[in-house]
Image (cartoon, rainbow, N blue to C red; front, side, top):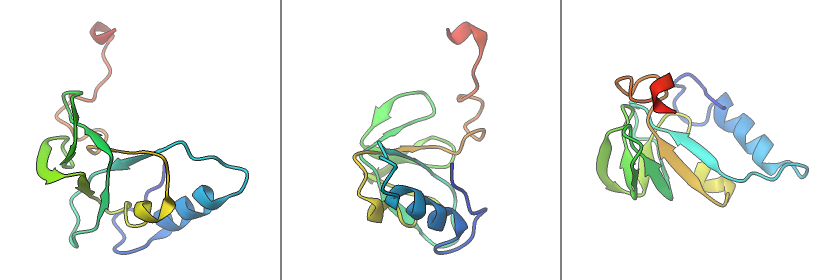
Length: 110
């Protein structure tokens, strides 16, 4: 997991992600891109998203896991360089712990 705590532009999270994805001994199978509210509209393309109800959608999702109208795109503060990584799949999700408890694991969900 890479995070840069809301740093605008390319922060330490994106820099570390690029190092890992470009390492010759590491095969990146995919990226989970986490949506967030950003002051600048930083965004990335996604192949598919999972909303807070567990539904797959070709549209983006917001920080709270709600489906957006934008097709194949999410905004976030640590997604700045994902398009440059050339990974097989990018899955967008809401911000973990901020999806109205819909992302909580509970025994009854087994």
